[in-house]
Image (cartoon, rainbow, N blue to C red; front, side, top):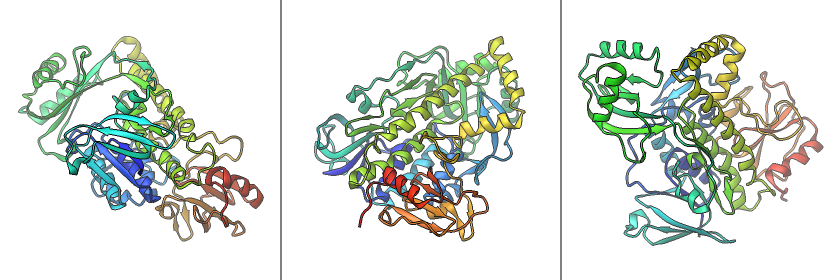
Length: 486
């Protein structure tokens, strides 16, 4: 029996597989598609995701193939300078095409020993008190999964917004259906680039859901085209045609720019939904399987990857047998409110993107407010997820927050977190994690950026204790890292 089956080899599923393998969990990723998709819906990593890559020693790989950006706000089409004093050692995002993100996360998962089976469609699921059984589509080859059934102790559905896993579980997915739709695709143009840029700039004065990005994802001569659709398609699984793009471009810009040779064409709506539960027994949901929302602010891919880093170590602890009671359920308790807040901010952004006089006036007002440094910093922290704070109860102001990559006397904090373990950063030299040394690293070092004697961090970098009292520390360690050994 496997330990964990992950359904879906997108960024969320691949990040989760890597996290599980850090702890020796036997994991297989099942992906319906025979080859990775070339579509690049998610086009970058925000600050918190950049931090997570650094925590696992992956950041250099992303920096080698990405462009940094510092655009403050990213909210409702309002662009402001990057705010000062953002609470991070990585005050930038990374423009990384989704296929590249998937490749890097997949390579890492494979290096750690995960198995990824492509062309392997799951067509059924059942669970009992001992594990989960999945049925694979008929006609599978040995390379794509072999037998008809697989069994594991746990399963995580990372299979997207139309998640079959979620539907088999019978989990409700309440929210609002799409009211507007946008066409998205990569194609070539015969029109002069300077003319295209001038026309786009004029159209975007009134229609912020319109745009043309030249040399999309580094492909010379290929443009990414975004244009409002004519209504909402009854079947959004059917991609639009090139003629549909031409028609909508002419409607909004007065020209179709001579578009031709499409690489891929797609559509997305503003539907906003969230799973009522992220866990049913031994089956969990993550990424778009748990929440969908408009792509405003570029938060979707990041939200899913951050789900994976929250869940991975908890599920690994459950498999290993040391998880304290309620640890796995804390995944829903922590991540459901975070996603709900993202859904709300995307709803607000869609209102700002409207073209009616009320939306235009609201956007002008909001733009003025974001000229205030504190407002800009708040909004940027919200979009980039550095402002996320989990509710761990009363205590130090750091409790529940993620710890930035503070400089230590002997290096930096994130360089000590590559193994995905808990960490006690002890500036006193008087504390101990005896009994938990197999799960928690004890680092005695000092930082001018940390004004508390010691902090206890979870594997995902969030602070679960701060102080200097050993007896107080001993009450916190079992809450997050189980019973002491030895």
